[in-house]
Image 1 (cartoon, protein in one colour):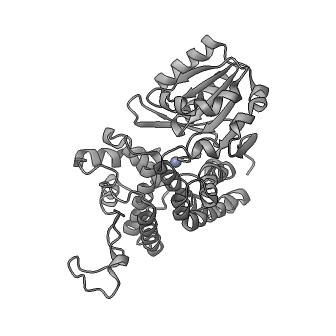
Image 2 (image 1 turned 135 degrees about the horizontal axis):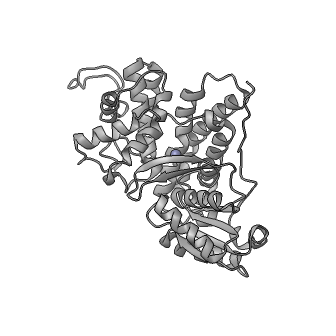
Image 3 (image 1 turned 60 degrees about the horizontal axis):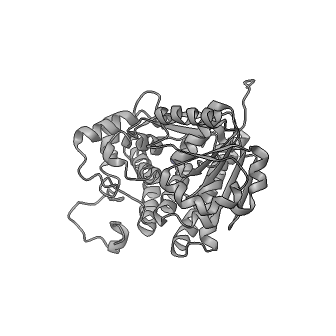
Length: 384
Ligand SMILES: [Zn+2]
């Protein structure tokens, strides 16, 4: 292959630790004197005590990304950059705030610092922004030419986020394995093999440590799981690049965002459910026995840590068949990553998979509960 490819592996600098923000003023000042702070109104308020000392002496203006990382908000943010004469963008928040900050920095050709306030995504790391409609429906993603200039991961700040955000981050991070192994599992390219294998290691770390991490926020396992979700998930995207793609899990997420009632659920929660849909497709369309075993393993894991397994768990029990079809059709658009599956997929198959994510993993008549297996192993149900 003689094509030129550019690697965007990692931020230029990553600083992490408890309480690191207060001591990071000189790192920030090196990149700019007139930062525009981009975040949601509530997040900026909650993060303010962590940022005061760091921003001391700089000419700072705050700007909200409002509803979403959408074209309307980005236009307003570009105006804010001009009005303030900003020379640096600082994104503070979750995936949407950080995606908006990174894309804004790219559009205005300014450096960008990312400060994640939760472990819900790896957006602080990656050279990628997802753009949504004003109403929050996924539209497209934008590959950026570089990763952020500086990532500041302050565990004290991340520990203030609701536990649910870390659970969602685990769901988003674990998807790397299920998607990368399908889209790139047969690649002979060194970097892609490396990325796929790291995705497997990441999955195993999350299987091992997530429950302990959630039981003891701020503890050693918690910190490792935060690193897994915020940093290592980003490393995999960085090394694997555009060829280490998402597959059905993220396509199902993108389809679900077309339904307004799904907007109260976090990105990683929808992606986690999307992994089960993907495995179900592999089971139904390709009769893949490995997918059955993987789904069984994930259902146990989701039960243990509280990730959603069904549309009901996502709060979508009122979803109409029309909406289900709309989500499935969006997931199956011609340019969708769902077509990285090694077989053709139709919206009807996606709909069937979406409503059967917890289907029994072994064949038995529906009413016959006389299996010698303990009931726990047959039918996973959510923890109360
Ligand atoms: Zn994701």
